[in-house]
Structure formats: structure tokens, C-alpha cells
Image (cartoon, rainbow, N blue to C red; front, top):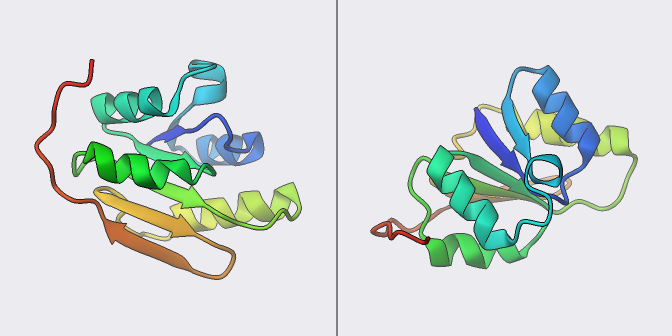
Length: 125
């Protein structure tokens, strides 16, 4: 799975997903200071799933009309130990769910998934 983790995504989770063989870029180290539109642009160009803890990505993903090869997973969990959050993230990402073409909200005890509307892609550069 090709993933782009937003700057606010926790380092332990990024490292755990890498250790499990996921192709993951982390905006904090790969693209420091990039804005949200830049994150979505890169995800679109590279067919990556965006992982974030920033709820602004919901509106942006729907407005952008990401292609079916992309998607956004928003994690909204109460602050617990870094180990618990990392474990929850890894378990969710490896749950076998189809994330591409969807906007998902992951909470402590549930996950909601909505398909992103199919829109004609426009050059955003």
C-alpha cells in the first residue's frame, strides 16, 4: 500500500507501518512545511492514500475529487499512550478494508467510510 502520512501523523505509527513493509512517505521529513493542498496533490500524482489527524482533510478531499486510486483516512482518537495509538493505526490499516476512493474516519471504537465522489480530474498546478 502506498501511503502519504501528513505532518501531524505520529512518528511511531509511521515507523511501525514502514517496518511492516508499507511504502510510506511522511510529510514532516519528506516535505516539511507543505500545505494541505500540496499533500493532496502529491498523493494524487503518486496514487497514495493520505493518513492524517487533521479534520480539514475531509472537506478538502471532497472538494478535490481525488481519483479512485487515492483516499483519505482521518484518525480521531483521544490521546492515549503512543503505543496504543500506534497499535490502533496499524490494526486499522491492515484490516483489509479498501481505502482507495474513500474518506474514512477512524475513532477509538469504530470506523466510518464514505466513498469520495467521482469527479473529472483537473490539473492543479
